[in-house]
Image (spheres, rainbow over the protein chains, first blue to last red):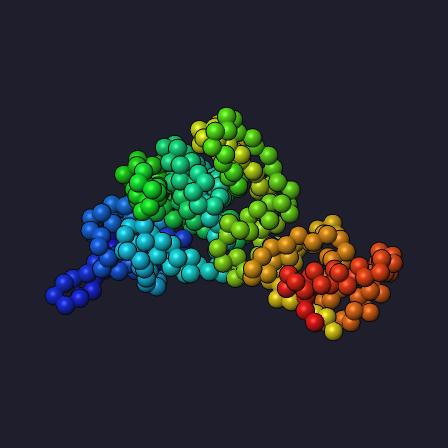
Length: 266
Length: 79
């Protein structure tokens, strides 16, 4: 089922889709210069709501009606994506531990790896490689339930920089890219920080100590101070996962064997 | 009097700590960690000096003031 609300602007009916992700819902005002078909294709997994008993896994959690994603700038798909992300993060502020990270899960077990990194340092590329075999959860924002460490998926379109100067980014939906669907209840079992050095010829994988892990993670969080005792929460997560990993690499393919082992073992 | 600044969370492990404010996360070594733990209520500079002397032995002249100034500059404590 696709939920497409609308509103009237003069004689025109403007589409207002509802996006479900991070366990929340937001409305999107598509008065911007984007065709509805293009939008629904790119956001296919956030618009779909589970049909009870249909046996199909779902990627997005339906939630109650949420806020409105306010689109600023040129109204491009990139701006729309940024507006939706901002609104979803605002909706879950103080409730979810949110990391600037990509994530995939084992489609059968739900065991999941999240890999945090600043923008433009390899999250989306790694996600596209891993998503051919593992369930796609997000390429940008991982929302984690405190204590249960269940991941609330955000299977947004994947943003990649275009050849023409890197902006605007192109936005391709996970279905367009053929990415695997996620397990219905993904749970974080491995957490890593990515550090990509172009040209590096092999990966180096090491484990942070507790304080280094938290210090590396904090800049890759959203709204962390709004959480209850956030440093203790990160310490609990570190202990639960038996550490946080540092993945130094050149190309995404250098990490796949190690990630295979992690997701098979947990 | 000296009191804590706007600290969101403080995580202490093996004498050292991480401090989170709305702007940053800082790692503190043993002496500033003890200082921060001690001012769970407003204290005078003399009380702080006496506490750190008792805990770590006499500090070089001016050292406690340096630590206090450093913590103030990061917003972790205030006067």
